Length: 208
Image (cartoon, rainbow, N blue to C red; front, side, top):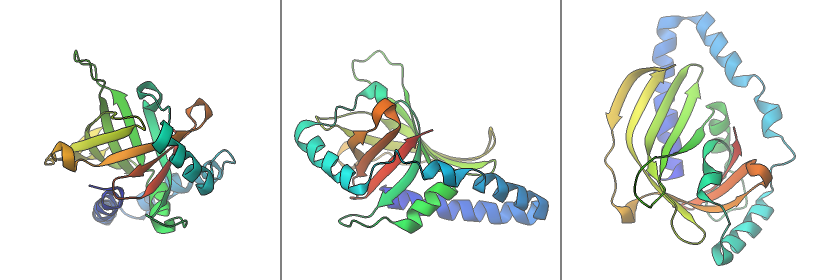
């Protein structure tokens, strides 16, 4: 599953769930949900610390030749999607970027405590709408010099707060068919992160 496929699936699921939910809960709930979503987002995403596309492309060239110097531990945490650029274009995918921000899309990475030598992440891709959330859950690891972050999802969950409303398993792809992020660069003190997905899209996150 590439980045654009993930966005489309998440968006369609969110619209379906929200439509059904609001039919039962009424106008007051609807207004409170939209108020929570819009509150304070614009200032955060207009930070002057966000790198330009030109800067990211420069860093990508360096990362492919010399590595990005992004370590396993520096990736641990919660990252909010900010912007997406389509493959082979210098224009932002404004539709997808707007959806990412509207639904508070996040990439969360935590270390799995195992006895093997290889460090592995527990990975969560999520979108939120008020107290409703859709979560794709799986694992990932680092590979190569740049490095790559191959990952897979093994289940999807629909939650209302901490309560799981729906849970489904997802088929795990073979290693050669796994999606991945080719890591490009990270800001000072880990304030932002950028990577290119297997499908060619370029993504930018801010540390939550």
